[in-house]
Amino acid sequence: MTGVVSYLVFFACVVLILGIVTLGLNLQWGFTGLFNAGVAGFYAIGAFTHAILTAAPQPQYLGNFGLPWIVGVVAAMAATAAAAWLVGVLTIRLRGDYLAIASFGIAVSIQLVTLNWEALTGGSQGITRIPKPLAGVFDTPLAFNLWYLALLAAIVGALYVALERIVRSPWGRVLRAIREDEAAAIALGKSARRYRLEAFVLGSTMMGLAGALYASFIGFVSAFDFLPIVTFQVWAMLIVGGSGNNRGALLGTFVVWGIWTASGALVTKLVPPTYAAQGAAVQVILIGLLLVLTLLFRPQGLIGEEAVVSRHAKD
Amino acid sequence: MIAQALADGIFTGAIVALGAIGVSFTLQIMRFANFSHSELITWGAYLALVFVAFAGPGTPTGPFTFGWQLLAAAAMAALLTGLAAWGVDVLVFRRLRRRGAHPLAMVFAAFGAALVMRHLVVLVWGHESRFYTRELQIAWQVMGVKVLPDQAFILLLAVAVVTVLHLFLAYSRTGMAMRAMAESPALAQACGIRTEAVIRTTWIVSGALAALAGVFAGLTPQLHPEIGFNLLLALFAAAILGGSGSLPGAVIGGLLVGIAENVALLFVNPGYKGAMPFLLLLLVLLVRPQGIFGEKGER
Image 1 (cartoon, each protein chain N blue to C red):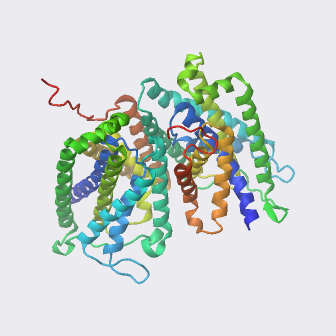
Image 2 (image 1 turned 30 degrees about the vertical axis):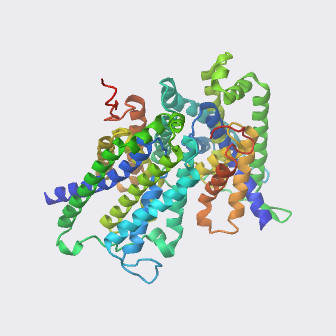
Image 3 (image 1 turned 120 degrees about the vertical axis):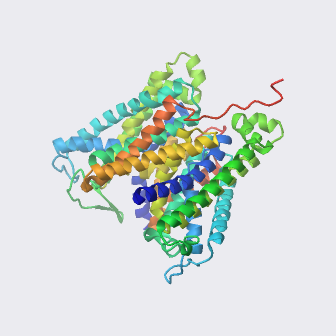
């Protein structure tokens, strides 16, 4: 029984962490129309910044400063924001699919750096012994996971409320105006470039935050946690849930991650270990099919964007 | 050293170019970045493996490690991959096109299609490396540069294929229709060009070229399920560098990407090889976003 409960708590934690990533992507794509295909890269920057700053010191590493948890979280967000700003300044003016190609390339490059710069990131060994916040207070892993779940729920709740307010604010309306008709938004005197850059940096910062929360939850990060498949999974979550809707983003995260874990568990049970690679392939094929079928048969996702009508238009 | 890097670069570049031609056509004729194009390369490589499994790679002929059987397998793989590319279009992309879906929805669909296509290969063949042939060959020394006979053969074959394609685009009616659609799909349709037929031809040609790229990559020296995916950034870099929709552009773009990758290896850690096409791409997008042969326009 405790086994099932601990597993569900663990699952919920991962869903909430990935939910933050999907909310960030929703701000970029769902509300602003920015095609960021480099999600895994920004998530990785957050996770590694946190790990490098907070992990227990080891002689063979440049980093591992053993700083407090909160310093790691704030620095992870700052580092991701800085990286997103640099990337954005260079690429934000590109046409939709060119931005996708460029950001995909950025994620590949970031992953290569995490794999090859061994002194800083541990290379394929990764960084271990990342401290978990207040871990000393709790005697069992389950107690810690429950506390972490509460912490994540509070963070996601706060982010959700903030995002809902932001997208309804004048700033959020400009984002949607740019998404719908960039030329018209520019004609109304809005600097599309500035707003797009702001949305890009803000969304990526959320991905960085999620990376830090992931690192301090698992206690270990390596370059193999941030392969391009992560980007595709997060996109599937957003599309399946419904882009342009924050509740849709969270629901999609739950559904897609649920299918991913359930199929993984099933594969481990049914498929003999010699065919583990084939079993894992089935998992990915399911995600790909889910993405394509959603686009074909339910393009708005499970809960699509709500139509927003100006309150002045009702009279 | 530099000469060897150049030679290796030209050879890699030829493979990249064959893949980039299809990416470039899709970008210009169907107006989307096809992230699943790399998987056609993988499919081509493995489909040829199926035929090689039946007929064998043939007895080594002359200095090469394979006989005519491998070439026949490559031709069959090219045909089947071309049809497969069209099949994916019918199943996925055409439906979205008909519905007038957001152009970027095509790119998401390509993400999904790529995941399915690549992992179907893993499902059948697993992650282990495969070989068409285990024959060894001795490199030729040409002016101090080591060249494998297979590589020289592949390079010549690639040149021949591109030449035929150029003649097809320049003189056949279908080729002209393809160029017209690359210029302006709306105008082409108004002139009575059957756009769906042109799109079909484009997929078949792109798929066939991708399959050849896959066989060539698999012959030198091995196949693995990421054989196409690892080339994805190089394909985009080459297509955009050359200017999308331009055949000479894609070929020269491919060669430049191949050379840049191999020359860069003289100076940087080989672990970063995969990032080289991206750096080149970023440079192009910043300096000349329409590419070398592209027309000025919105990018």
